[in-house]
Length: 500
Image (cartoon, rainbow, N blue to C red; front, side):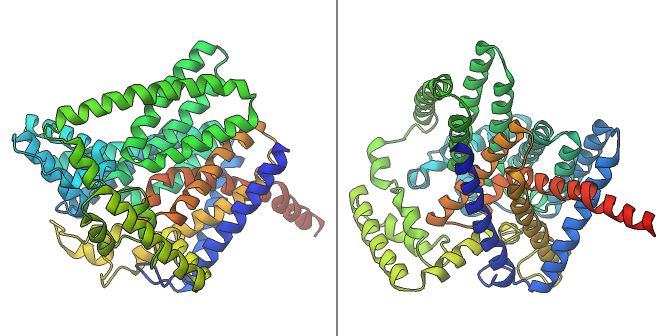
């Protein structure tokens, strides 16, 4: 029954992402760049072929020096990230400006402007991190923004490293090298360096959560496993506080644990999570009142936005942020008034969708979220650049020379999605039970992200923190094709040549 459920899930996953890939190639008129289908198709074919040949080559190698390869790749990544930090630095804008302004006020002893944090309390943890960075910057008399970019580089690269470790555990060291090559060629890990926000700051947590869980499952002693469960819960709490979508991989982990283990084995895991989340919620709330001296519970309740605000926002157009929706919610005098207005709007918009072209709405929202390989970086880097130059012509939305960047990013992204589909098609044939089990954590996670942004306010950058997880799934797809080359095409070709 369990196996049949997983097979059914994988079928649904494949159908969903085939739909997304096809529409992202042929109907991408809702994305920031417009892509001609033919260059994308040819590029995707070539890109996947190159990686499959790399996979085939590595399979034939008896030994590979992973330490040297990993070291070289990370040196290259860091150098390009530093260059990106210099070339594309920006003056903090949008939400980041509020976070930086508040941090500046904190270190200078000025009163906070709490209105932003009342509206967007989900950014409280990010605000605390920015304050910490400002304190360090003030202590060493360096630029807080430069230090933030350095911190961003560290977090992104640790995420890549743990992705590599997860791939090594799941698929072996050769496939781990492929995953490292794949992500090293992705533009967001460089262009997100100057963008100081939760999208890149939370990138570490999904793969770190997965890695800790993998280690815990290997432990035979209960005490060792339970200690890791506690650590897992702490990491999960911090990740979720920085970006709530991190919770999706935690949910996926619990689902897979229940499917493949006896029910009673989940009790220690649940106890660890419940205990840690209660304790750390108390500590977090204490920090709020300790750092934000003027924090007022009544003002917070009055000005905070109901969760349904973001559902309402996701029900019109392409599901993206709308300033009019923000202003309409903000102007309501009480929390209850906000809820009432939002509920009426949701009902109205639901009827519009139901009585209109629901397929077009869903297609537009999915392509806007999943069909954009730049992950919105070009727009964020075009807002108040402090080092404006010719380099912006190559990445800006209106740049005269951006074709290489936009098509390469799109080809890389679509290749990853297509490899994910190929990967899932083979999960049910896996001979390695453990890999089969843990691969489903990855796919359930990404399907959960898909469902979440199907209903939520959305944007392509909102899935950027799950890039390492998607690369992990895609890596198995490369391995599958390389294995097909090794086991089928090459032997048949040799046989034909021998007969001739």
